[in-house]
Amino acid sequence: MIKRHYYWLLLPLLFFYACQTSPSDPPAPPNSFSPQSRTAWWKHDRFGMFIHWSVGSVTGARFAGETLRNPTPYGEWLRCRNRVPREEYDKMIPYLSITPEKIEHWVTLAKDAGMKYIVFVAKHHDGFAFWPSQASDYNYPNLTNSGFDVLKSLREACDKHNMKLGFYYSHWLDWEHPYGWGNFWDFENDPSKFSDVNWQETLYSGALFRTDVDEKKFGIYWKDKVVPQVVELLEGYNPDMLWFDMWEPHEKTIVSKEQLTNLLDTIRTLSPNCLVNSRLGISQIGEGGVDYETLFDNQFPTYSIQHPWQSPVTIGHSWGYNRDDDAWRPVSFFVENLARNISKGGNLLLNIGPMADGSLQGETAYTLREIGKVIHANAEGFYGTGKSPLEENMQDWGVGTYKKSTEGRHYLYLHVFDWPADGIVRVNGLKTTVKNAQLLSNQQALSFQQSELTLHVTGPKSLPGHYDCVIKLELEDAPQVETGFIGEINLGGYHLASQTAETQNIEKVKGDDYWIPGHLSKWQNSQSQANWKIYISEAGEKSLQICYACAVNYDAQEFEILLNGKRIITSDTEATHPEWVEYRAKNLGKINFPEPGYYTVTVKPVNDVSSELFHLAWLFIQ
Image (cartoon, rainbow, N blue to C red):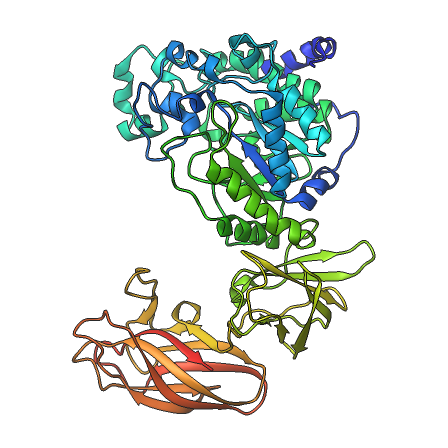
């Protein structure tokens, strides 16, 4: 229940923040919480549930029988995309029905899925609040005549099941308030103003368009609705986080930096331990800023991020329930990307879009429970783990996560997405000595062999689990790795791909992911070359294959293979097709590696090339 007495005491302070007549230093929070202490639980738990339950769920994102007009079929955007008038939109509200039992089912399903926190959409861009807000009567208890406080019921269910709870709040866009941003179809009266706006921009991203609201009017909305509603959420429900959704830099919006910093100061004052994400509109993360970065929707980074971050992800395509959305992603997609995010130090927030009565589509419930089976069987490899020192591109089987226990022990968890048919998981680059290995799901001890930079862990040949088979390695010390070379792939061997080559006087082509693989082309002369650095763990003789395309009339040109700069094989190109479209593999013979260690493999023309040598896709050594 909202503590109105405290809210009224804060009104003078909040009014001062909202008016922003002059910049001022914010008051110091009553308690000092460091960014590290605030995010500690969040970094440990790693996995949460996002819930988009909205008015548009009543019709499954249709209006008057028409499907969503946007190529990005986000059901919760129905009112904007289909230009639904307020009076028509509000007719759907009475059909939005929920019970405490359905709300608790969301929580228990999140728990079954291995999730540790929930973020519920308390107010989306439509301006409709799911609690008895004193700042706006446009809310669920009022317009359903139920008096039912959805947030209070959800808070109680989360407390009962030891689940953290946060709230999504749309502060920038609000299609209900006349001075909120984005509703031009109800409030704009002059269609001629659209002439200066790209029609596609208006059609697809129309909620970003408004000409009749200036900073002063927007400030009224901010003072009268945003600030008091955020206070109500903090005071009434003690959220563990607030999740804002301004995905554009504030400089591109009508929201001022002062409004954002003052709102953040208010949050820090009222609830110092409440997490705040970067979509508040403040880019600074850490001390003096927000707590973590929210990436773009369904974005998974391929690069390293040094601060806390999170990927918000959908099960299908839409966030809110959309009856026409059938783009269901497989269970493996979520399990693998959760592990990948953790291996890079990140977090994953997986969304569900309940129907009007709070029920879930069968695909949603099935996906969550399947994810949960993997996580609960391998919990130690997910919770409390973080960045892996292993370079993902050097591992053919999956990714690693790392944990240092409270006792000072070091554990590396191998998340094997593609279990090798011979049962041997080949780990490349690990220098630290491994003490023991086990299959985490059943604690089966596994044998292993370790050389300087290669580790072979031998498990069962038959698949020991689904989606993600986790191997736990105990290390003698903190993991040390070496990177920047090509190691073994599943079943052994070394794949020297065109895209991983260091090149000189040639061009890398990505290919079309259909018939044409990535390849190296435009070999100009005898100085054109491709080089790969590999690490050989055992001395001996190995076979060499090459795969390339060569058009008719370009064949019979000589090329050579060098090992550490010494020529070991020469061969002539052979035509594969009249055009540059047919790629074929060819055995080139044997290579002797006299001792374990690093080697550089080079491919180059023997002589200058008339116009093209070949389109080289890969080499394979085994």
